[in-house]
Length: 465
Ligand code: FAD
Ligand code: NAD
Image (cartoon, rainbow, N blue to C red):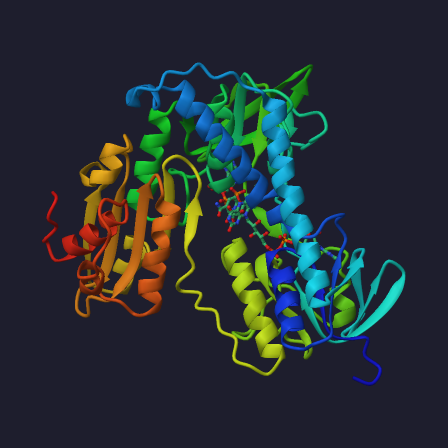
């Protein structure tokens, strides 16, 4: 290794970075990971996937108890909210899991370089005043909240907040306005609605959840509305002013028109995330960004600079933890001379609302642009387990190529859609046809039988509808 300090230096310890570092070390490479946060795990473990799911899970129980779902099964309870304890269990989950990564680093002999890294050349970075040279550098710096001009986030004041602030609210807001009807807005909006807030979602486009299948977007909107969430679609927020303990928002139709104002106790800004590249000294490494501020890579996660690799939210593709993880593993394997591959056509995505919303592969709209398709749909209302569990909302939709029957996309709205979608991803990874899924024996009674029935519906032969 001559004058290199490390074979691999990973910048950032999110799901992309920490997983890449562990795999590189497992493959016998001398590895370090630079992380400026006080704990490992990046956005996902500290302020993203994990704490949001801790609040979603707890608030789901609260609503089930408060909102009649339990009463329908003969369990009568009057829940009392102890928000302090709810936040406590969220913090415990984060502490346990971030500490777990520290343990895994020690176990695999990955050095944690504490501090923010900055390139000084293509193979050298400075971390906490120390120069570190590595044969391979993986940029895994992730992303942060996209700011909205005219709407200044101040998480400490708890009036205009981003997702990090919305996880930490000390009391349930009377009225919460969510700017952006995407994943974060719907998940965190659901948390606070379940705990008692009135929630209004302001979305620029004509429908929530851009990027998802059209039917799914419409049905999700209908279900969330039924739960009490209000939506102002085709609307933009142009300004938000804090007046005392409230915020006053100025709204305009997206296409232009008369402005209106809306008062809120808390405003959540969730209009997307942008890659973290500022202050990284990318110019010193000779790296440039694309128009969206991302680092471009080839299929092996090599950047245009030899020895510099990039993965996760900082490169193009969906900003998802499991995508970052798989890229981390593949990138480390490529560095070690193996063949690391990620199939970007089969990346599932899940919105953890109630019911959950999940999909993998093409939407019906995308599939139709590529050729003729056959679509099978099956409602959860006709699935025995969902019906018995008082979970009638949602459906499964299987989209297959009309000529070859190969499955191109699967979409589900169901209480456990996030778990169900895994079988669809695996089937698609193996090149399954809808017939393959239809003739696979599924345990009864399970929600997953709805996937089998939707696959049977592709050829017009579902049994239970
Ligand atoms: P990150 O997790 O962002 O980690 C990057 C790390 O790099 C950070 O810790 C940062 O401090 C560090 N860093 C940055 N610059 C430097 C530097 N110069 N030197 C050293 N360290 C640096 N995805 C899902 O798949 N499922 C979910 O349920 C989900 N829920 C989410 C909920 C919320 C509220 C949010 C905000 C996001 C959620 N996501 C979810 C998205 C997910 O968190 C990201 O896709 C994922 O964390 C990206 O991983 P990453 O490794 O690319 O970057
Ligand atoms: P998003 O891209 O999912 O949604 C942003 C929404 O804001 C879009 O619907 C967009 O049309 C809307 N918007 C943009 N500008 C607007 C404006 N000025 N006024 C009103 N609406 C506006 O972004 P997000 O919800 O902030 O989430 C960021 C990323 O984090 C996503 O890419 C997502 O993949 C990831 N994430 C994933 C999960 C999950 O997997 N369950 C959970 C949370 C976050």
